[in-house]
Structure formats: C-alpha cells, structure tokens
Length: 246
Image: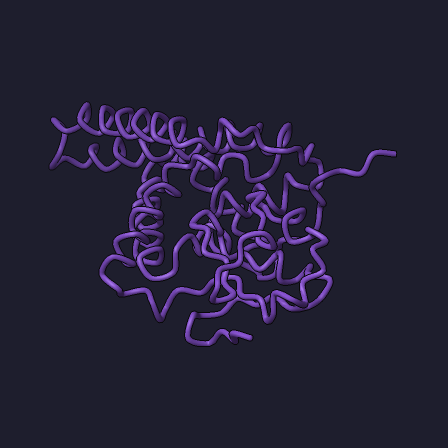
C-alpha cells in the first residue's frame, strides 16, 4: 500500500483556528443579503498588513478565516496531494496578483461616482463580499481536490504580507518580534521529514535550518503544526533572541 507523501494531522490548536471559518461564510454568503458585511474585510486587510510587518505570515497560520475553512472543515475530506510547483512559481504568483489587483481596482473605480451617498458603502461592501465568495469557491475546490492550503501559495493577501514583512526586515523593526520555527539542535534531528509531511504549505524545514537554527522561509505561516508533530520534540516557535544555538 502506497504511503501518502503528505500526512493529514490536526492543524487546529486554538478556538480562532477552529471557528474562524464562520466569519468567512458570514461575509462571503451573508454579505449577498447584507453587503455592508463586506466592509469588515477592510479591517482584516489592515490587521494582516500590520501583523506581517512584525511577524511575517503569522496571520495566515493563526487567524485567517479562510485558513480555518481549509484546515478544519475541508482537510478531513481533502485529497491532500502535492501542490503543483507552477502554483508556487514567482511568475504565476505575480500574474495572479496583478490580475486580482486590477480586477478589484476596476470594481472600486466603477462605483466611485456614488461616493458620498449611502449606496456607496453597500456597493463597496459588495465588492469585498464577491471577492470573499470567490476565494471560498476557488480556494475551497483547490483544498478539496489538491491540498488544503493550495490557495495560500498565491493568495494576494499572502503576497502583500510578504511585502510588508520585507519592509519590516529592511527597517530592522521585526528583528525582535518575528517568531520562527527554531530547532534546539540540528544534530538531534531524525531527518524523518515529518515536519515537511505535515506542513500546510508543503515546505521542508528539516532541510533548511539556518546557522542560527531557525527556519527562515518567508512562506512559513508559523502555524506550529510541525512543532506539534516533531517526533524528536526539538522544534519551537521562537524569536531570534530566544533561540538556543548549540
């Protein structure tokens, strides 16, 4: 019997990660009747941009409502296959981000002539509602037939978070706030690859620890799944100044 490369294991460790999907359905579906619910997405965008400035893609792994939908609701029935490499490519990510931004901008400009009226806020909310609904449908289908976090490979919000994180690093702001997957001692690693097999983003921590014993990959969503499943119990989520270099 062939063993699956990727292992299905619990990625839900907090109430937010367990029930956050309710917000996604509230906005994406409830917003069709109450469009102003879409305005809540603006707060989501601002929150994730601020958080990523200090902590990278921590939002994706710990607070994202869509992530909750993918990990808690869909993962049990997901195919959990290997995510195609082209969906992770810089070209695809850039093209999708440009298309997504253009499409959003076009819709917002289209309703700009109603700015200052009460209907404007309903129309603006509806723009975000339909966008949220699109992510539910597209991301949900990818989660079901490929892997739960397939959408997250090229999610425009993820791209924006990476940009915010890079700015934080450039300014030296997040040096003491960013938490990364940290290994106690690389010599203690079993090289079993389990951290990679349970990783929602299908990364390979055990092969990429830096000289400072940290996993520096910017796609890491700091979800703690590898920490919880490490067979040697040598992984933690720590700030750089808290790490132990052996």
